[in-house]
Amino acid sequence: MEKSSIPGSTGSSEIMSSWYSLVPAGGVALGNLTPVGQNSGRVGCRFPPNGHHLAACLKLPNNCQLWGAFWHNTSRSNEIYLVLPQTVYCLEKDLVSTDPMPKKIYRCYWREDRWQIQEQHQGCEVAFIGGQYLIRGTHFRSFWQNGWMRNADLVPIAKVWQSLILTHNRREAYQVLDEGGFFAEMVTLIEPGWSILVKIFGDYSPPEYSCLGAGATPVTINPLEKIREDWLDSTPENPEGAVLLTGALWQAKADKEDKEDKGLPVSIPYPIFNHSNQVFAYAYAAEPAIPWQSWKKIKYGRNREPSTYTLTPGEWLTPAGAVYLWRKELDSPMTRSGTLQDDSSIDKSRKRFNNWALGYGHLWLF
Image (cartoon, rainbow, N blue to C red):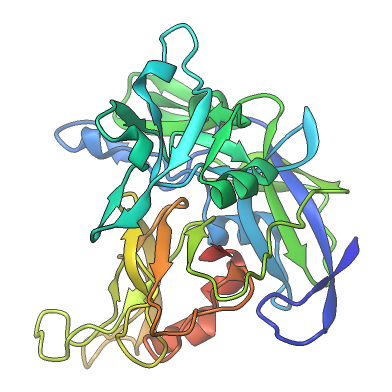
């Protein structure tokens, strides 16, 4: 355990922090049980686990905060791996069937009101590979600062985790029974040597045993030391933008005149300016959003139970790897890389749940 500055703070306050790896003992199923039939194509495993999944697995106390999910490999025990951002590309000629690892990677720049490949590659055939690989954190920093990199430490996501679709009628002791049954279930298997990586801030001791997912897959939680993290909370002067390292639950105030939304918050793929609907980013690139369950206050009829909070599929999560460019006329939403605190003026329930403290919306400034 070591001392770190408190995430989101501007002073010199310090708090204890530690890194942990989460190693599932088998396949992980997250919110994906669907009947076989015309809707069976909708079956899908919500992976990687979101901040609420991780907090439940870690039994995270209310006075602690987590960063993640990132990725860890035992062959490089002190390194952080993260999703390769959007706007990253390589030349088609560098991708061959016998060796699909690109020798050089590049990133796009914003010119003439759109994302464009670098000038020396105009007219060349390129392949956009953002979101398809993990990249070593220290290599990511150098690559993003330079705009290109040779022999970056990339790992195809298919070699880190894979999904299996199982059909069955029931499970027992984490095993599928009665194969070929009514239910279709997708589980995710993490390859040997890989694990989920998180950082915990605060006075925290991991449980001896834990579990993850709908099948309560057993999870081993291991403390890690000497993780190379000096790049993770960078503080550049006058940052021009940010890369999203973890999934985010960005929201905006809906138009009060919209009778369907009734002024409720709506999910968007970028952060907005506090206390207004001004957008921080003048340009962004992001993958399609992922459905995410949220807590909403439901009002019942006059003669029923009083209002209560319940889970609804009411929000959309922006996946890790999104890229944002900040408006020059606005100050950056933060001066130090980390999780962007929720704007409680948009949704008062956010003040109650503090999603930023569970690792959502980790922005790496550049």
